[in-house]
Length: 92
Image (cartoon, rainbow, N blue to C red; front, side):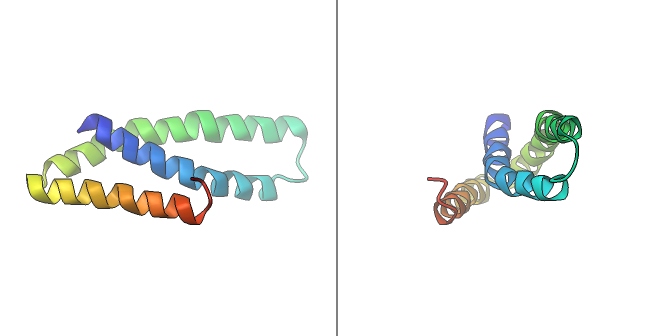
């Protein structure tokens, strides 16, 4: 369950990462190169990494608390929704 939770969170971050980075680029467009680089590193390395490390156990616990049939349905639908999201954003 832990690996599935990690995969779900990673897929969402891959899809949302482009939008988050575009927003940062827009906000920091006029900033110094070093400031932009430091913010990029903090958000991508530490922000996304911390989110994966902290959210994975919570999602895993939540999924484990579901009935097996419902859990399978939730996981399957989640990956399908992420796949559709990726398709619509031309990520696939």
